[in-house]
Image 1 (cartoon, rainbow, N blue to C red):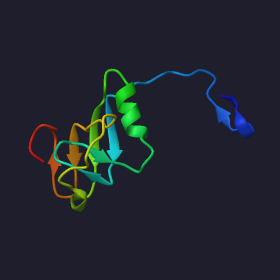
Image 2: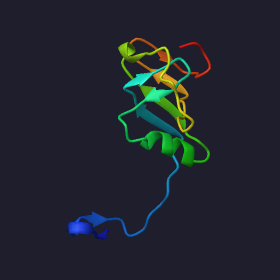
Image 3: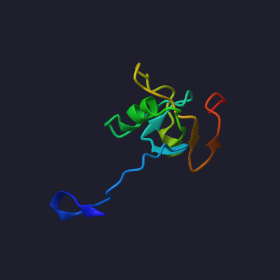
Amino acid sequence: MEPGVYGIPIPREVEIVIPELLLAPMVGFDRAGYRLGYGGGYYDRTFAAISPKPYAIGIAYELSRLETIHPQAHDVPVDAVITELAANLHRHARM
């Protein structure tokens, strides 16, 4: 470790790790696996940038299920959705 900004220790060497699985919080989701997040677009940019794309699991409450979120071109669907009532482990299966 070495001192970083404000003297906070940071690693001297960086090892890049590409995750195989990501958990994504969702404010809303639809049957196609598209998600509404918290507005920053961080998860969609991460899904689009990592290769190979990690298996993405969205975590939400069942009451946040929507008919559609009206996805835009930059939206990337999750591969699975887990709620307090059910887990759908395949995006193309009926949610």
